Length: 298
Image (cartoon, rainbow, N blue to C red):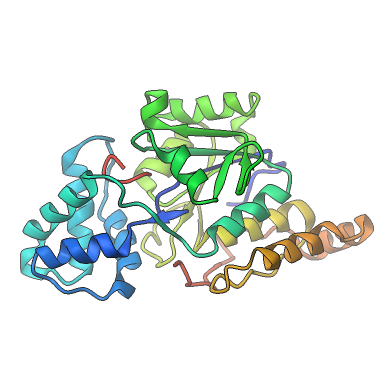
């Protein structure tokens, strides 16, 4: 499977794409449960929690217990998984946990925006996701410190949540009536993001940095940077070099965007014949591992 051609719009999840749970909050919660954890293991634990979700219904406590069991197990809870999962669920439910910015994700979003596609956030959240993204300098509607978005949909605000295809349909309407066949949705939860996007006729792109979903029949990438690379390859025949996510350098991102935009049209055409958009079935984009509501935004 490859990206739609042409590609007019990119919809994006928040949790697991831009934000992960705050390390200090999780370390403290795990400590109250009697378990010491290494902060270096916490980001991985989120994706392990997502792997445990075999289905998805927003607001269903059983779903979030399953997520937190997977999370607790990844952190070595072993025989205390149930008790630790309850502790974690209580911590997530208090709110304000999803504040760790995934390294490189703001810069990757800026690169995607530079390709000229329409952009929308589609998040299952508690009504605060637009303010949180703006406060973090990731994105906002119109001009601002982050990337300018065309729409930001928070499930609590619009009254419908993923995987209901209606929330995706609303997003496309707000983007000016984009044809779903010419859009992608980027998310980390197959049962919410991918199932919902597919039901709406949109191509799903799964963020899967640890190869947890090898049986997923679709496009899998390890980071939002790889989505930017795929779009640049598809639209311009260019594989834009990855920005050093450890450096968090806006200047580096600007330099990359400048190099992409400064290629002569004839050079782009020539490169496209040499760098045709490959099928994801034959392309395993796993080079980057630096990946850095409801109880969480999805």
